[in-house]
Length: 249
Image (tube, rainbow, N blue to C red; front, side):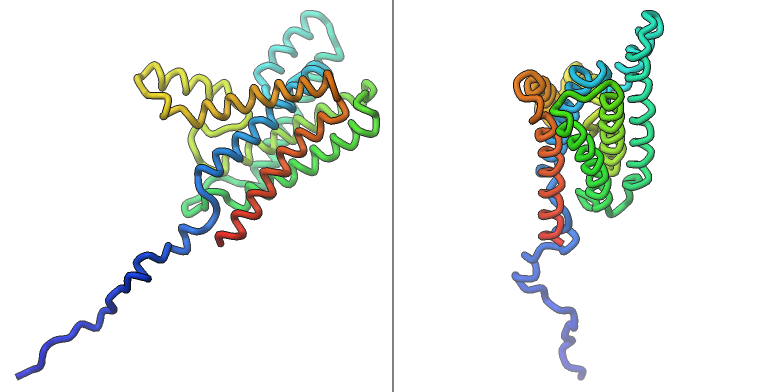
């Protein structure tokens, strides 16, 4: 008679059942990513306000607005405004292209915060630092030519940010194209969704408004500090992303 059959399959211990999957530890939580995206929206709002108020009257990320400004400049024959708005559009498009080449598109198995996003934001930081140096060298009062150069530099930087954030692969998540975000919020509310469903989008929209208010306020009371807000927001986002993603690998 044969003896009792014994199983060779290992019985998982409580410790092994509680041990988190290494893949789950990579990157950061979606909650932390949300707050970093809000910080990027603050940066966008500040940069747009500074461009509009102090650097030629054009936007650095709101290309719909710049297209309208181009139309207005054509009817008023305002050459400087046409150059500012048209140049910002071109610079933004170049930035979008560069950001898309760096960050690529979302891929299966991506962590919450892909490394390519950090790389794209580092390139944006280089551009914003260059703008900041130009701003500080002139004491916050650049001449007409440098004004356009700084505007285009900021537009290129936000173009990079705009396409880099798309690497997250989250539908409707943007830090620059916020007309679409606002439209989605209103449509969801009209469809009977609660505020909880649109909370993340409302945080991003609020971040944009706060950033715009802060950027315009600094231009009024302490213009030399304006780039500190922009560079500081972006540097903080990059620093947190690097620390958290390294720690959880």
